[in-house]
Image (cartoon, rainbow, N blue to C red):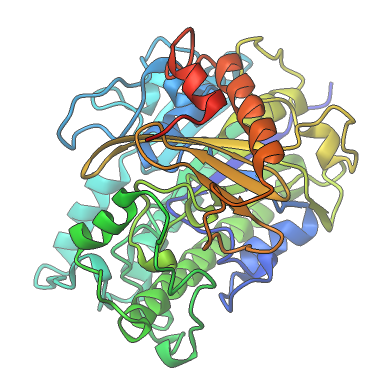
Length: 464
C-alpha cells in the first residue's frame, strides 16, 4: 500500500501578496517562496476570509468563515469575543485519526486557553514563550525601542526569531520523518507582522531611497468612510509623507526576505530527509498589511487588496502542475482544508465553507468555479465597524452598513483610490454585486444578514 503524502504548511503573518517575487509587483526578493511557486501552483487571486490574525487562523483550523462561530476580532484586546471551541471540527484532527503524526510550531492565536494539542496536533512548540526565554539568555542586554515603525534587530541572524523558529522546525521535521509514517507539520512565522525588525544582512538589503511608493499612496480618502481618515489620526500618521514611510517599507521588505530565507532552510531540510517528492507543501499568510498603502498602518477598518489578497503556493510533485499560475478566485483558509483532505484521500465534511482546489492544481478550472471572493471585517482596534466585501476580476464592492459604501473599478483603478459608489453608470453592476454578496453571506451563515432586516438595506443600498 502506498503511503499517504506528508503535509507541510508554512504560514506567515501579514504578508502582502504583492511583496513576493512571484507576484511581479514590487522589488522584494523571495527566492524560496518563488521556488515553491515555480515547482507547483501559484494562486494569483487568493483571498483571506477576514484580515485579522485570530479569526483568520481559527477559520483555517476548521474551514469555516469566522462569523459562523463567533470569532469576530482578536481576543485579549478589550471587548470579549468568541473563539473556536476545542471540541469544534478540526481537519488536523482528521489527519491525526487517519494515522498522521502531527506537530505545530509557532504563532497560535486560535484559543485563549487551549493550545494546538486540543485541536489535533500531537506536539506543540510554544515559540513565543520559548524564543523569549532563549533571547533573554543569549542577549540579555538588548532592548528594542523603535515602536510600531520597527528597527534593526542587532542579534545575529541565527539568533533572530525567524531563524530560531526555522531551526526548531527543521529538528521537528527530522524527528517526524524518522518515524517512518505520514506526518503533518504546521510552521507559523510571526513575521512580517509589524513592528518589522530584520537582522543583518537583511536589515540593510533595501535602501529606502530605492523603495517605490505603493500605487495607492497619496490617496486623499475623499468620498470614503470617515473611519479611514480617523484611523490615520489614531496611528498618528495623518501627515506622514513617503520620506517617512519608505524606511518602514524597506524594513518590511527586509523582514519578508529574511523570513523567506528561513523558509528556504525548511525546504532544504525536507530535501535532506528525502521527503520532497512525497510532501504537499503549502505557503500562505493569514492576511496582508497596509504598511503605508493608502497612507495607513496595520489592517483595520479596510478591505483593500493590501490586506485581503494573500500569497498562496502549493507544491506536490506529480499532482500540482509545475509553473502554473492560477487566476481563479480561491480562499486560502476555506479552500485549503477540503483540498488537503481530498489530496490525502480522506472524507470531506459537508459543513466546510470552501471546496477542493485539486482540479486547479491539476491545471483545470471547473465551469462552476466561483467568479468572486468575499472577505469580511468587524473592526476592533479602535472600535467596532462591520464590513463585507465582494471582489470580481473587474470590480470590488464593500458594504459598510453604518457609513458610505465603496465601489472600485479595478480595471481602470487597480489601486482602489476612487470610490465610484455614487458614480454614473454603475447601478447595474452594483445591484448584481449586492445580490451575489448577499447570497454568499446567507450560504455561510453570516449573522449580519441571516433573516435580518439589514438584508434590505444591503440590496437597496439605503444610506443617509
